[in-house]
Amino acid sequence: MVPRPFRLRQVRRETSDTFTLELEPADSAEGFCFRAGQFNMLYVFGVGEIPISISGNPANPRVLTHTTREVGTVTKAMGKLRRGDVIGVRGPFGTPWPIEQAEGADVVIVAGGIGLAPLRSALYHLLAQRDRYGKIVLLYGTRTPGDILYRRELQRWRAQFDLEVHITVDRALSGWRGNVGVVTSLIPRAPFDARNTVALVCGPEIMMRFAVLELQRRGVPPSHIYVSLERNMKCGVGVCGHCQLAPFFVCKDGPVFSYDKVQHLLEKREI
Amino acid sequence: MRTLETVLAEHPFFAGLEQRYLQIIVGCATNVVFEKGQIIFREGEEADRFYLIRQGRVALEVHAAGIGTLTIQTLDAGDILGWSWLVPPYRWHFDARAVELTRAIALDGECLRRKCEEDHDLGYELLKRFAEIITQRLQATRLQLLDVYGAEGHTSRRGGT
Image (cartoon, rainbow over all chains, first blue to last red; front, side, top):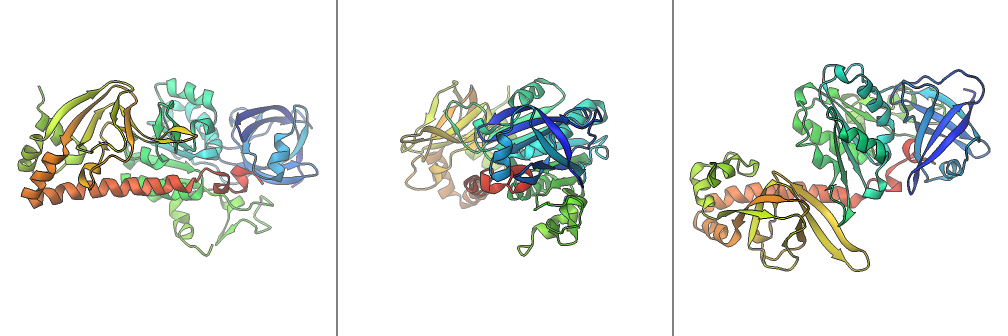
């Protein structure tokens, strides 16, 4: 529960309001092991502590990577950090994406906005173990072409013959030659075998609900659809109760849930 | 060589449609090709046809003063372009531009409307298919209007506090 000091190796601006932090341990040579889909509590000293998903490569424990968006006090302070600054890290917390269970199946990744960040870790793993999976399809939706995260990496992945990358934006100026429309519109014609597919979905909750509907319409069973939920995580270990979702503590029992476990909860307005 | 009737029968929009109706519809159909960048129709013009896209990509655009031309949706192979031919006053509401070389089948709206008036069963079959497409697009538009990727769409873990 005590934050471990990490030093900032690099701050990379992704879009006008998102950035990626690359951190390394400041206290020892020991790396940071995590599984794709988990999150950390990041502490900007004197400002506050917030939960942020890990977006780096699980196979590289020397570098801890987080991508976030400047929307509040802590993330705005985080965006002002410079190389060499130190922040506190608690974690890793929460459940990972079920990437080992998906072996032998097609994997469809549906990401919306900055929801691509926690899925990037899963993509690193899937691509490193490429021969263990069937088709791998990334469907990524965002607001405008200027909001596309990890642009260079997406271009590289798109050029690979063993990964399908489809990107869509909600609106664009006329110079954009790519797809325009909501991310759910990519699902009906995405190339995967619905009966043998594991879907990983992350983005705003309303986007996830509609994405799940489309996946189910294609025939993917709810037990094969995984969503990453956001709630008000504080302690990270299921004690404080801030992130409670009916019987679950999202920080400990989640953030990754199979959809059949949480479907009835997401449909309740009262929680 | 594949006939227009075969191509129509294989298009998802006409899936399951009786052969006799396909034979009627094919009389209103022609093959068309649009070069990259070519305007297919413009807002306000008479909507006298619709298109089954076979290959390529089409952007639906709207011009907004002070902003420029915005693309609000793209349509790809297998999609239907245009339903204004069905609804008075039969005018296009947006511009359509081929983003890349696009091949399509154009269906004459006036010809189809006339045939639908003569045979209401055909009219109902076509309306059912268009109603499904219009509903899907309405739902997608609602989701777009919500601007779910804006700052309000995220809470702490991915959006930051």
